[in-house]
Image 1 (cartoon, rainbow, N blue to C red):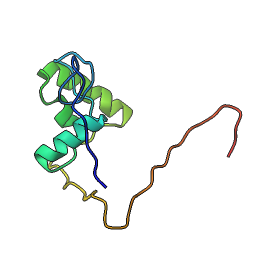
Image 2 (image 1 turned 135 degrees about the vertical axis):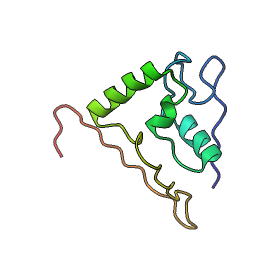
Image 3 (image 1 turned 60 degrees about the vertical axis):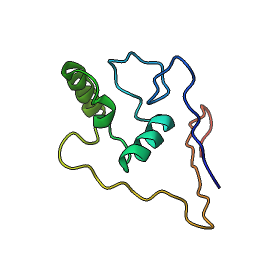
Image 4 (image 1 turned 120 degrees about the horizontal axis):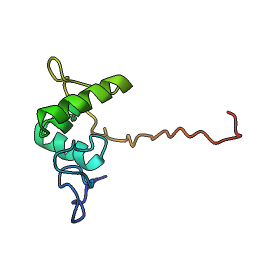
Amino acid sequence: MSMFILPPPPGVCRSCARDHDPGQPHDKQSLQYQYTFRSEHGRWPTWKDAIAHCDRDTQIMWEDALRERGYWDGWEGEFPPAPDVAPTPGFVGTVTKFMIVEGEQE
């Protein structure tokens, strides 16, 4: 099974396929950004990578906001090794989606 990431549509960031000001971070959660970055660097991106092109004031603002929310994942120390996520023969994988629907209980 092969997977292809199509190029971003015209008018959006070429790195993350999102419409954002060039001085703002890339969308680290965008599949476009994650897989493009991994193919170039051999590891998954961190928020540090997503804000690396921003000016220092913007980096500080984003780092503080991400730390407040518990999402900061890598300003200090070495980057963790990239996990091997390529599917193995006979393994397709699963996707789990959690959704809260008002009035329903599990």
